[in-house]
Image (cartoon, rainbow over all chains, first blue to last red; front, side, top):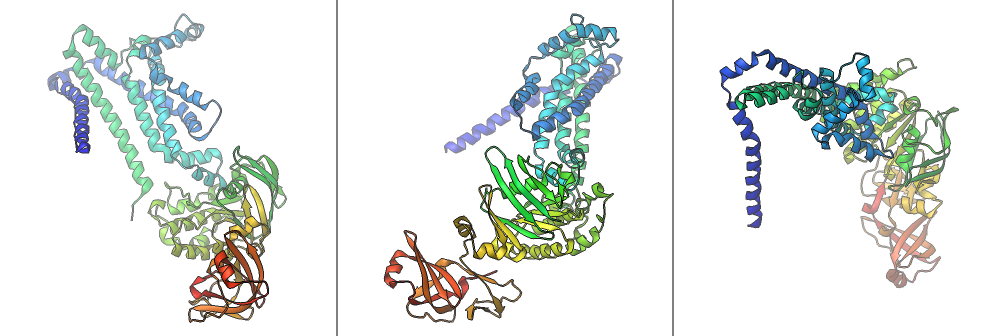
Length: 265
Length: 344
C-alpha cells in the first residue's frame, strides 16, 4: 500500500514538473499573432540581433571545440597530481554569477588595465564588439563542452587505443582514427550544449557589449521601453531558430550513428 | 625472432613486476599461466609498451625495444574482449594497421589470413553483429595482418563458448605454423596450454615461479605454488586407441572415443579410491600397486601409489587412512571411474 501511494506521489510530482516547464513556454509561443510575428522578423534590428546571437554562439562553440577537445581528452585519460584542481577551475564559469563574469572580463580587456590598452593600441576592439560577445560566450560555454567531451572520451575503451598503437598508429593517428570518431556523438552534443548556453547568455554579455545587440539584450530593451507584447515575438523567433539549429545538428549526429553500427542481423 | 626479457621491473605503485627474465625462441608458442592478479597482463602490457618500465630491458633479436613507443615495436596484441573498432567494418578492422606499414616488407597478404580464418562472408559486417568466436577471429586477423614479430594473446579463448573455443584453438595452431611469429599466450586453462604451447611459465605475485617445457611444468613443479596451481597431480602422456588410453603397460578406460586428442589424461587425486580388494566393474579402472609415500596434511592424507612405473597421487580422509591401515610398500588396489579421467 505504502509503495503504491509513493508511486502516485512520484507521478504527480513528475506531472507538476513537466507542466511547470512547458506551460510558460507554450503560453509565450502562442501569445503573439502570426501577423505580429511576421512584422517583427521584418524589422532589421530583430533579424540582425538574431543573426548576431547565432553566429557569435556558434563561433564560441567552435572555439570551445578547437581548444577544449585536447583538454577534455587529457582529463578523460590521464591521472595527474592536481587533476581535481584543474577540474574545479574548469567548472568555475558555471558557478560564478553571470554579471560577475562580465565584470571580470571587462576588468581584463577594458581601458583600466594594460592588456585592454595594448589591445586598443593594436586596434583590437573587444568592448562593444562581436569579438567581445564571443569571448564572454566562450567563457560561459566551455564547461558544458568540456564535460560532454570528457564523458565521450572516457566511454571509449583505452584498449581500442592500445590495439591501434600496437598496430603501428601513432598517438595522434589513433586519436584521429579511433578515439575521435567513437566519441563524436558526445562531442556533438557538447557543441550543442555549449552553443545553447552561449546564445542564452545575457548578464555577462550586457556588461561587455550592450551594442551590438544580441537577441536577449534586444528583448530586454524592448521589454524595458515598450513592454511584454513587444519582446514576446523576438523571443519566439529566437527559440524557433535555435530549435531548428539544434534539431538539424542532432539529425546529422544520428545519421552518422547509423553508419557506425550498421545493420543488425 | 628471439625475444629476451632481462631483469624487467615494473612499478605500478600497489603492484610490482620483479626481475622478470625470460627468453622466447623464434617461433615459440609460449603459455603464461598464473592465478588472477599474478601480473600476467601487466607483463604483456609492458611488452607492448603500455606501462612504464622501471628497470631492465626487452630485446627483439638484438634490437632494444625497452624505450620504443608501442607503434615501433612490432608486437601485436589480442585481448580477451576482442577490442574490435566498432565504427569500422570487419574488412577495415583487418586492414587498419596496413597503412602504417606500407613501406615495409610483406605486410600485404590479408587474403590468405581472411581465407584461413573463414572471414570472407563477414567482411562488410560491423563488429556489433558478430558472435564472440567471429569477433575473436577478426581480432586475430587484424593483429597478424601487420606481420608482427610477436603476437601477444591475453586469454584469447576464455570469453568464448566451449564449442567456439575448440574451433579457435585449431585456428590458433594453424596461424602459428603459417605466420612464423612468436606467440605468447596468457591462459587459465591447462588443456589450452597443453594442446597449444611448447613452453610455459607460471607467474605469481609479479615473479616468474617456473619456466620450462609444458610437460615439465605439469609433471615436475619446482615449487609448492606451481604444484598447487597446476593442481593436476595425475597427468600422464598416453596413447589413445578407441576408448582406451595406454601407458606403462596399463589400459585405462576413458569412457569415450578419444581419437584426435593430444594424448594426455589427468585424474584428480580425490577421484582415486584405495582398497584391499579390486573393485571391478565395466565403468571402473582398477590396478594393483603399492604405497610409495604417505604425507599427512592434518585433515587428510596424500598417498603416492606406484603402479608399474607410474605414480598416482590420491587424497584420503584421516578416517579412511586408519580404516585401511596403510603403510609404505603395502600392496593395494587403486580404482577410478572412466568418467573421472580428463582427456587433454
